[in-house]
Length: 227
Image 1 (cartoon, rainbow, N blue to C red):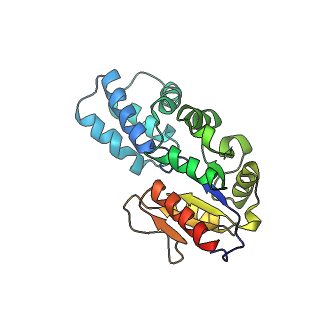
Image 2 (cartoon, rainbow, N blue to C red):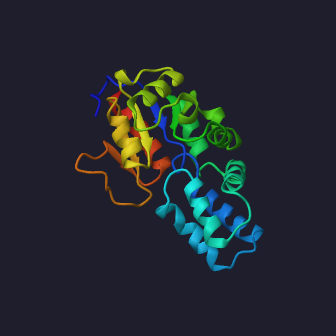
Image 3 (spheres, helix red, strand yellow):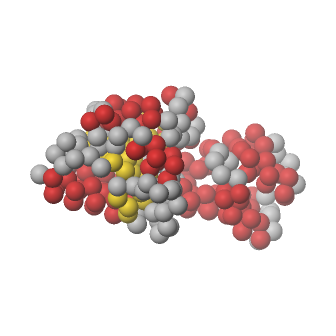
């Protein structure tokens, strides 16, 4: 962890399932998808468990859904429909907008660093109102880098007006992409656990929080102690 008094008030956040409720948006999409294609009721259960089997971008999941349910649309069509709809369904997690506003009022520079396609991720950032509460953001699909590459964190820090070499915090829910990636730049890290046990290895985060609002409270409290 950065030594007291040496770390700038920089907070970089992951987007999906940290600032926004992507899991909730996906569940809404799954219900709509099943209704639109007139699938059996048990298909929703398959769709909701599929992301654990097919993690990452949903093109593989949609290819399997096409085969599973005998859909007529191409995988490309299904993928484009998914990408258009998810930003419309995405919502900021409860309390997040107020929390980001609190950080900035307290003098923090706030940024987002996220993997994903530019149009999809930018749509989420703008539609949820999060864009108005951050100083900058970097999306992997725009810059050609993906977390946990240290360079994408450095770019995000610069977008927010800081340098990772000076310290700061990375906040996210993924042990590898967010916590290990953020640590590789010298930043402190805060893991948003959502009630999970840490499974990221022996070297854990500098702090853990139940949800994103708890993480923000932790950062504000630590900054207050260091003054």
